[in-house]
Length: 269
Length: 281
Image (cartoon, rainbow over all chains, first blue to last red; front, top):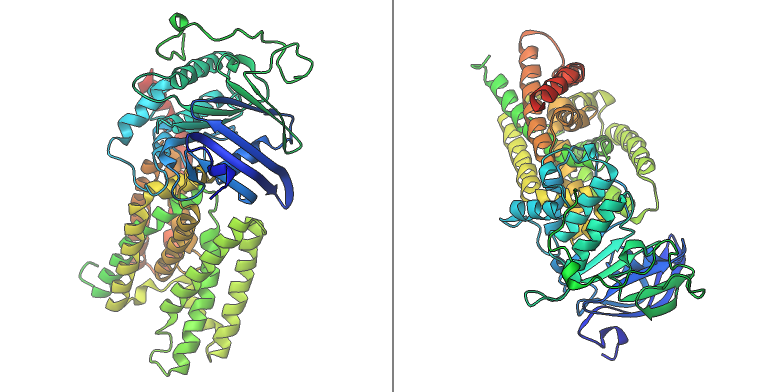
C-alpha cells in the first residue's frame, strides 16, 4: 500500500486527503497531517473552521466521506490500540439523568475497543486519576453537585485514567478557572516530557487561544474553511501580524526550565 | 395467602419482573429515553394481535398461545428499528416514539379484529392479567427476566459507558451500535416480561418510576439501580398482596403504590438532606 497515511509507522496520527461532512454539508475539504509521536499540537482556527469536526473524524466519531486516517500506526478501525487513546470532548457537564459518582465516570474511561468489562484494579486507578485532577476527595459524591470546572476535571480524569499515549483535548478551557488551567498545563507538561520510564505522550489540543499552553506547544496547525491554512513549529508568537490567533495577552514565556517544573500536580493552594 | 398456588405463582412473577425491570429502566433514564418502554409496549400490542392471528390460523387452543412470542418478536424488532432510526439522526427521538405509539395501537386493534377477536381480548394485555398466570407463564417469565438480568448485569459497565457519553464511547473504539441495539432489545424483553404483571399501558411505569424514586436518594449509578430493584420488588409484592384481600386491579395498584412512594420520598427528602448536612458538619 502506497497510501500516504500509512507511510510513517512512528506517526501518532496520520491523515491523507480527509474529507468530512456534518449534516450533509462538507466541512473538512481534504486534510493531510502527519503528527509525530511526542508532538504537542495546537489545532487553531476561527469558529466553523472545522477543528472539532476534524478531531471527531480522527477518532471515528464522525464518518469520513473520503481519505484515510491512522492512529498509533493502525488504520482507523478495530485494530487501533484504543486503550492508549484518550479524548476529552468539548462539554459543559458530566451529569446525566441518573446520579453518578466521579469514580463511576472515570472508571468508564478504562473500557476501550474489545474491553467491555472493568479491569480488577479499576477503582484504584480511577481514584489515582481523580487525584491527578485534585478531586480524589469528591470521588463518591454525585457528579451533578460539582461545579462546572470540577465536572470538566472529571472528564479530563476519565481520559487520563488509561495513561494515554495519544491524548486529544477539545477546548480544555471550557469552565476551567485560571488556577485549574495552570495545574492542567503542569500535568500535561509532565506527561509530554520524555523520561526513561515511558515514551512521551502525543497531545493534540483544539484551542481558541494559546494562553497558558504556549510553553508546551511544539507545532501549530491553523485551519481555515476546512483546510490547513498554516502549519508551523511552535506556537504562533504574539504581535506577529501573520498570526492573528497568537494571544497578545500572554507573552510567550518559552519552555519552563527543568528545575522549575513541579513534579506533582497541585490543584489547590 | 401463601397457601394459594395461584397467588404464589403470581408473587413469583411479580418478584422476577420487579427485579428485572429497573435494570434496563436505569439505563433508559440515564439516556433520557424514559418513554422508550412505552413506545415498545405499543408495538408489543401489535405483536400480541399478530400472535393471536397466527394462532387462530393454526387452530391452536387457546388461540392466544402465540401472543407472548408474538409480542417478544414484534417488540425486539421494533426496538431495534427505533434505535437504528435514532442513530441515523433522520428522525428526532420524540417523533419516532410518537409514530410507534399510534402505529402500534392502531395495528394491534386492526389485526385482533382480523384474527376474529375483539378489542376486549386485548384488555388483558393492556392492563395486565397476573391473577391468571399458569405454571408455564412463571417459567416463561423466569427465563425472560433471567435473560434480562444476566445480559444487563454482564455488560453493565459497557452499557453505562455508552449511555453516559456516547461520543466518548465511540472515540474509545467501543462497539457503540451493538451496545445500543443490545439495550433496545433488553428493553423490549423487559416490556414483554412485565406485560403480564402491569399490562402494556403501565409497563414502562415499573421500569421508570422505581428509578425516579431511587435517584432521589442514591448518589451513585450502581446505588440507584440496586435501590430501584428493591423498590420495584417491594411495590409489586405489596400491590399484589392488596389485591388478594381487596378487589383491585393488580397492575394499577402496583403502579399507584409506586407513585405514592415517589410522592412520599419527595416530601421527606428535605429532612434526609438536612440530617446528612448535620452529620457532615
